[in-house]
Image 1 (cartoon, rainbow, N blue to C red):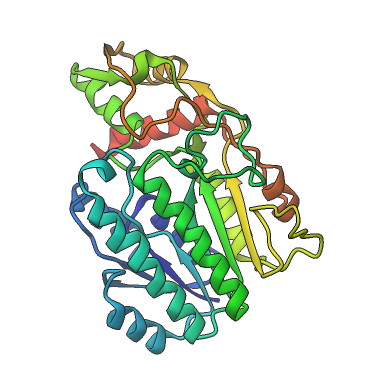
Image 2: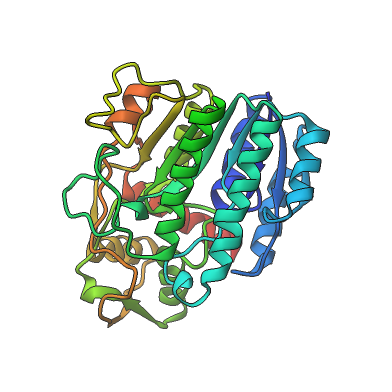
Amino acid sequence: MKVLVTGAAGFIGMHTSARLLERGDTVVGIDNLNDYYDPKLKLDRLDQLKPYDGFSFSKLDLADRAGIEAIFAAEKFDRVVHLAAQAGVRYSITNPHAYGESNLVGFLNILEACRQHQIEHLVYASSSSVYGGNTKMPFSESDSVDHPVSLYAATKKANELMAHTYSHLYGLPTTGLRFFTVYGPWGRPDMAYFSFTKNIIAGQPIQVFNHGKMKRDFTYIDDIVDGVVATLDRPATADSAFDPAKPNPGTARAPFRVFNIGNHDPVALGFFIETLEKAIGKEAIKEYKPMQPGDVEGTYADVSSLTSWTGQEPKVDLVSGIQKFIDWYSDWS
């Protein structure tokens, strides 16, 4: 297949592109290479993809409507993996317009281009953040997600609604993937595990929010990519059992699906830090802080729908995954 991967210089985008290239697909990557975090890391990721004959890259912003239309017209993609977005919960408190431009306007441009060019399947990144203030665990795609607690989460919920509209009106198969706290080699420096590692090694304090009373369903990057590729290979279809009198938010009468991708094993923040300390061989200096605006106390993915749809199940446990990250970090830094 010829696949467009947006956000190809990003953490998940690089790994997904590599997996598709390794199996023989042609990948066109786009990314705006913004400075939300050090662009050098993004360029280093792209360097990992350049040796593949089937890879090409264009610097392009999602909000550039004419640019998006032009690349779709020129390249004639079969399928699209849309991973580009303005990420981060806390950043959305201080920079809300960045989320509107990238996550809303940018996503609309992708949807329109997919419609105009008869794309076979659009797979796009949603987030566990859409579950917001929900306390019923584990989080299921059949749960209501009407109470986001950050603008970032609200834009991801909006993406799912927009995708459903295009699936309903135009028959565009769309699959949204709610990622749960992704970690691993080549990860994002704004994520806690990355900054914790940097500070522990440097002997600097780490900030532990909500006094450490948090749980996260940490998911290793390989398990995420397994899910992305498996769903890409099985385009969304209408749910013949969908009941509009009792609508399931994860399916529809249209070719629309939403799936959780998580480890199905929430871990206390304290244990997570202990795992990092053991892998690094050094104890962290901890500064305990209150809960931050937009954060949630826990996440826990019910992945049964994804497993039923694709056969994929999480394989990498936290201890193994953290060790792989530390091994990479030691070489990279």
